[in-house]
Length: 154
Image (cartoon, rainbow, N blue to C red; front, side, top):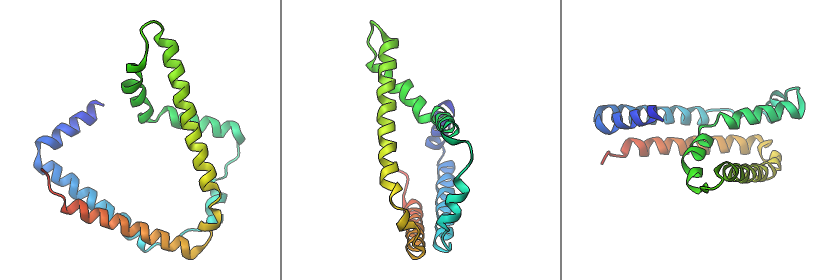
């Protein structure tokens, strides 16, 4: 958090640093846009086969748990938002209860994404559609880069 506050302070104080970061961000967006627009797409079969690793459910659960526990957003929510809802009589139980609710809502959200996007295999297996989606995404990133360059600091 201190590094974010320090970077924010530096960008607020230095117009030159702000401009450098803004131009670097726009340049990176243009780079990504060019890569997407001129890409040939990807093969769903290669991607699916490469993403399958042995280890089963336990390994998947462990990797997901480590990913979630190392997510800074989770730490920020629990450090800044949750404490204001803890009662004075039994804050540990209240914190545990709110944590379980937070985890259950996150699980339901991810499960709904899995069901929603799990059925789209037929869409991304179409090479022409995939290529057009990549080009459209690249065009959008390019437009974001242009907007970033045109934005002025107030």
